[in-house]
Length: 192
Image 1: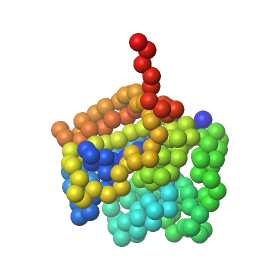
Image 2: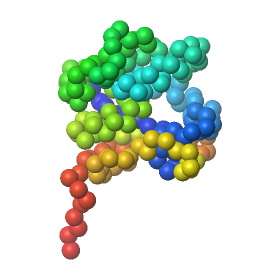
Image 3: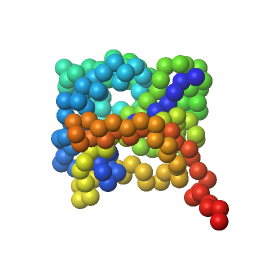
């Protein structure tokens, strides 16, 4: 059975991006970039929605020699969309038009290749709510983008308990936090 990880990079105040800021909020360092380029970070299939596909495939087309996009180009990718049409232009990409939760449930049952999301806030929320996520990982960048932040990651999420399974600091400033998630029916009750 495949393992599914939701994987985000976020600002300290929980945004996925910010207007006018460079990628990685301009704070990527050599340790973090080396980790992204490590073999352990390349051995998965990538899942994404249409919005992320349009954005990332556009970046990949504009920067074909960029090492990060060369890595993504070679990875198997699955896009969930009712608006895109096959064939997709980004190499190694499969389009799934049906229900993403059902498709990912089948992927998890029928493959052993690890699965990981890329962006795709709505897709990630749906997969987490359905109980399909095995790990929830964030890399927190030490910036607050309250005035320019876009795409608050955790809005409309269910209540979730997170049990820390790994943490790491990159370049003395970026915090990787990996959790095992448990979706809750509501706030936990306390026994008196």
